[in-house]
Image (cartoon, rainbow, N blue to C red; front, side, top):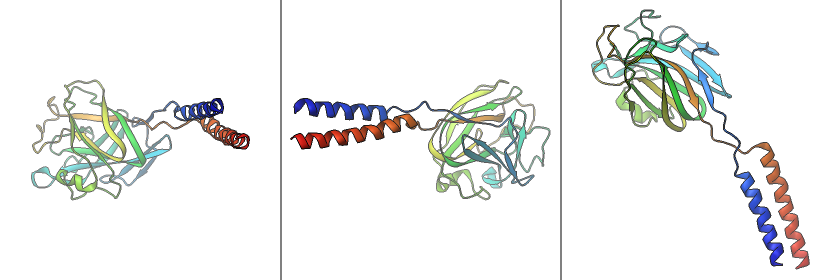
Length: 249
């Protein structure tokens, strides 16, 4: 009887071990150097959509204006060969002189809103020319619309977490940054956030300027179909084994 019980325990333990073995996670990357899969509107307040791994991210652009540069107003998100850029309302629509995300004149941010919760892993920014690459970002679960009339101080009331800042050196090379954001549906990302902006000169290398090249999500691993089949058949076997034990007992 003891041996039979030990056999049953071993069988069940093997099944649980197999069930706990996840399949290899496949990273999802949204490539913003490619054309968007969907778009809405034009000029200020436009939205681009990008789909990867069955998840769509809607991207809009926002600039801080108003008193002491503290209030958001709609900007224009631009799709370029270097990644996503932005034109705030002080720069004009299709600001061909410098469509990078920056903190010149107005602080600029892109708002990413995902169709399903994501575990953010990394983002790649591309300055193209030699500029500073300091960034600020917030993650959270804001899905109800835009940011018009709101400010940085009110982001927590919209479901965003605390400010995350990453200082980086000046360079012309793309930079990969790790992100902290598990099971979130929104990301607000831009140049270093401060109440004072850098020089309005478009050639000032101390200003933070870059395109957003790509964004990567690290999904939570799930059991493989074969493992689920093993679990089902194994549970049937345990049940039958238990019945035989009861009959013989």
